[in-house]
Structure formats: C-alpha cells, structure tokens
Length: 65
Image 1 (cartoon, helix red, strand yellow):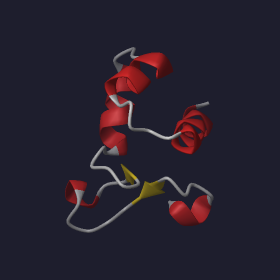
Image 2: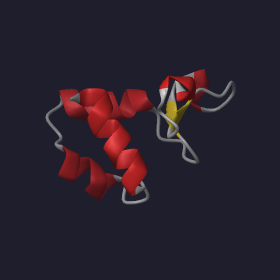
Image 3: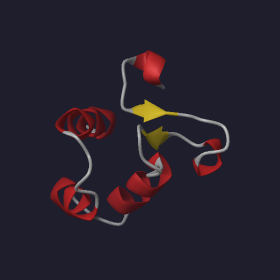
C-alpha cells in the first residue's frame, strides 16, 4: 500500500498477521475500518489513538472519503 502513495500504511509479514497497519504502530487498518463501520468518527479515532500523526490522519481521511 505504501507504493500507492500511502506512506503511513504498510503490510509487514509477522506484524498484525500481515494485514495492512499504520506505520510504526500495531494498529491494523482492519481495526480502523471496524471502528468506522461501527459509527466511530474521525475525532473518536483520534481520541482512541492519539499517537497518529497529522500525515497519518490525512491519509486515513483520503482512504475513507
């Protein structure tokens, strides 16, 4: 995924089951997607995961909008 212009999303074998995750974390995109489907908005995600950088936040918005 990083090659698609998303430098904050990576797939690494052995980390998070090899599923896409946010760089330098063990937060999988699966968890983010599940939260969004459950109705958690961006502010809620940022409250849950304050370690996300501004760049990562913007890339998350781009992925889901």
